[in-house]
Image 1 (cartoon, rainbow, N blue to C red):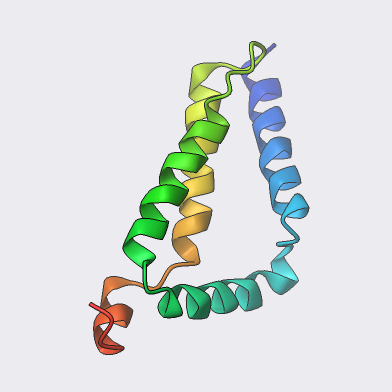
Image 2 (cartoon, rainbow, N blue to C red):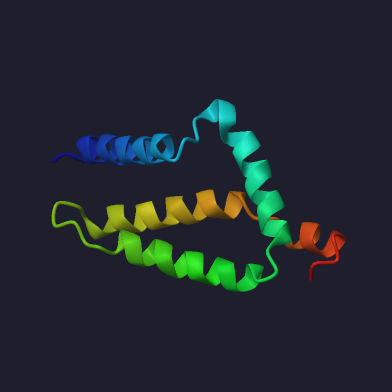
Length: 99
């Protein structure tokens, strides 16, 4: 498989993940706002974040023998970046007296 084919495959996987989560561009902002509001109300947010990180890595670590470790790393980073977007920032938590 060429580098171009690998890049295309990775892009398709990421697109499919986004579609599967119902996060097409038109609804992405609304989704992020809803998730941030839910996170802001989570009394165990710190623990929830840790658990989500561990679960994301574990799910992506179910090694696919047809996938290079770099692709797996890219998937983990992508998933964690998508999750981070749904969390309030430290400044937002501080402003809401949640820290």
